[in-house]
Length: 227
Image (cartoon, rainbow, N blue to C red; front, side):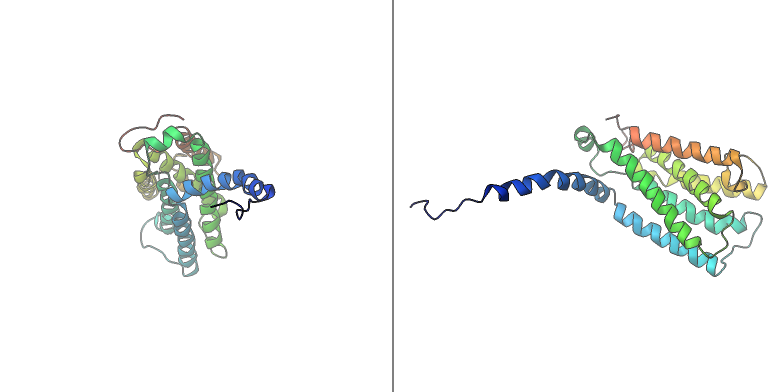
């Protein structure tokens, strides 16, 4: 048996895949991270919430009740969007992933910011042409603040329980609206141009972003150590 019929590939054919490999790897890592966090499904849910807000404003859905009734449906949808973002912080691999993933903090930061931007875009598109209480300023303030509560819950309780923060905050907001209390920490109860409410919502969002970036979501009862 001879090797006379064996043909070697030209050097260019070998070098081309090697040259393209870093670019493929750099895109593959974020994609695998997003898939492991169910980000594609989350984007679909956020689009659905935007459509739900559009339907609620177009057909003027309302709830009979006190002062909180006018804002109830938009706040519920915004809370749902914040809960969806927070739940995507849950990772299925736990300690092995944290031990080998030096890019994890940056991926968590990028995922949280990008999903929040997508949520705002979906809800803003749903509110286009309708009368949203407080307008766009209230939307971005409320969504950012409630997303911050969800990210803090994910860091403290685990990504699978990140929804508890927006839910608890929604319940507190409805109680405050019904009682007509005024505090900047319940920012949905304040006017859209209220500076104190915007600062409090921004602080909540910033704290949540810092928590999930540095610590990640609490997994299996163990707090993630900084990478």
